[in-house]
Image (cartoon, rainbow, N blue to C red):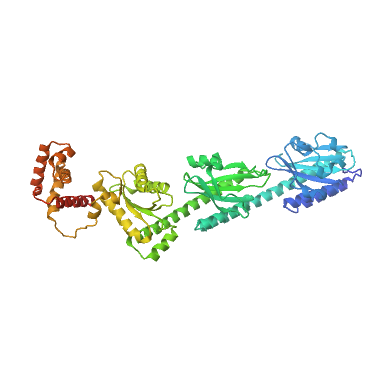
Length: 585
């Protein structure tokens, strides 16, 4: 029996088949099983070359084992579905016996690496699994022509059946081992993620474990920059030559969809692209890091050249990026909380005039250069819920002023804004206030430079907030210099229990206006501003002079003051102090 002219006896056939059974049953290692099959079939048939092709997930016939002269080509040579004699056998699920001049058969694909021009006869037999699917093909080549008997065919088909069973068992064993290794890898990755307390620890641990877990050549993790348009490389597998910064537009439509809609389904959040700039066909998997619709960054997984990502790779990538994204968000929130506390302490130290060493140490940790000109901002919104205005105001300030240092609490927002050469900080802040927090009152200091200047700067910003109610009828932005005389009055805090005749006399006027919805206080203010001139005051208030005289008489009755004899400056100062008192109550 066999390809050679010599025919072994049926007893020899049985011995060879028993040897096949014994050998393939002795191990579940697929590579050892395949090599044992090649050696046994070569000996049993006395052929000159034996090849085993296995089908991959794309239906290709990949050379998986062969006789020694050609072993270097294992895993390298592959045929597309239906290509070559092996492809034909797999497609038709029936053996082929070519007795002579094999190279001229139209089904043959000649490989120079196999020296196939010297082989005359060829046998190719399908390897069928229990469910009749094609596992692969066994091919036997001989240099001499040969006519095959019925016993030859039966022996080869029986051998193929045994071989197929051995391969199927070995593949199942390998798949089981692979799944166990995957679970162990996921468990190790989950442990590393849960233990990481900083991004510097988390991200390298993820990229290091993703490479063996997915069986890929490289992995990089990018995080979204503050501008929301660029991704910066934060960790990469060893030897990576990935760019340090990439734009969102360079990543592909799938990532843009995830960013704008917040969808994190598999098809929306993972996209396969092929790197072709260097002439290779290595696949690249883009896996966005998304938490609750917020895009945090991107994981890039680089596959092996000539391979492609299967569903299991995508599922594993989805699991990894989900865990990583949650961990990144948690760490960012903790870092933000820590930075917020540090910023609060830093601002308190600046406002309180703390020791320079303390201030400068915290400034370095926050990367805040106090030698650069800055404006102090202080914002509040009496009667409004901070959730409605503080968060949007903080985000808008950060977007409008790169390099701003901002602290937000339940009652206020404080910030150090880069002054810049244009001197347009008040105008830019007004636009932010109108867009993001129209209910907020914002005070701005004069420009500060140097740590010692900021105690005054915080005081000025707070005074601008307190004085805003008396210089503006509605919430808005007030710079310290816009307070006019109020910036002096705000520094005059009356001592507890101190009495003042003029303020005591004018206070009932405010109460009268509140009860009767009149404008006597406003009338007196304008009258004093016009230096007691009836005509100009009436014109400014859009009333008849007689009406103005009646109001002035009512004011004297309520206050008990004689406007003709009282010092107008004293009365005016008392009115401004009363307005500040009312605004602060």
